[in-house]
Amino acid sequence: MIDELKQLLEELIIQGHTYDKFFETRLDLALRSQDIRYLIITGIMADICVNCTLLSAAPRDYRVTANTDGITTLWPTFSKPASTFGSASSLIFSIPMQYWPN
Image (cartoon, rainbow, N blue to C red; front, side, top):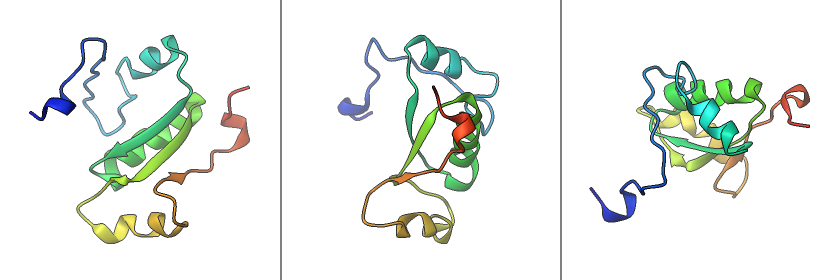
């Protein structure tokens, strides 16, 4: 493993077993216990795992940013529309206001 990517002692690793990394894991509890409300999502399957996790975060009141430079998929044309929203390297997804934290 690359030294810079090794787990630090204070880092928590949560293993997911489905496309949605919130489903039947301690991810939501771990984030809330640290008062984390803003997420930056990256991943290797934009149309599967990244999408499911992103859509699951919104109704849990998280503000979500998908870093398009850190997301890919087996079908490169799928992620192309996301990269056309300007020159920024991330795409901020619109989350309906009823899901915003107070």
